[in-house]
Length: 163
Image (cartoon, rainbow, N blue to C red; front, side, top):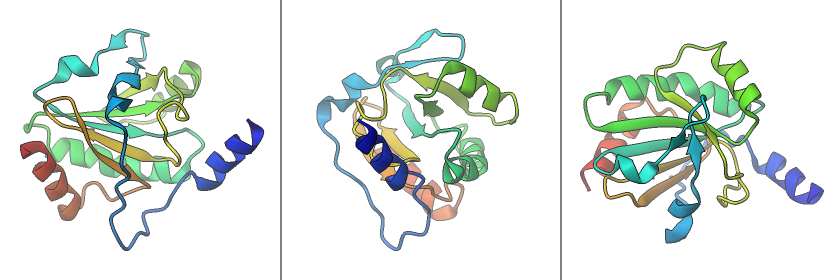
């Protein structure tokens, strides 16, 4: 277990310095393993959000690239606010750690706790962003930080949303 944790830490916090887009394939049943609660402990049902495109970013309080990309995610959420997107930032850390971080920032997207660990979700590095299409299927899995507010990334998100 310790070796697995060390591997995750070494692989985590991937930078945005990627020449080519890296989208990892995910098993279709992974959507059933996603279990989220809001910061009040209320369950969030991803399946009830059908008809919207869900931007689901997995992050951690200790991950510098995760923290660095949050202003860009916030700006992307603002740009796409009228286009049936839901932006969620999920961490499997303790509720207290997540709440403590959220109290220090002012972002418009929703922070949530992942009840499933990143290991259970086959996440090998943080940050990792999954896009769930309007039909409830994970159609995109991006590993590493991105400039989500860039024209290129906004266009990519819009194309995913219309598929």
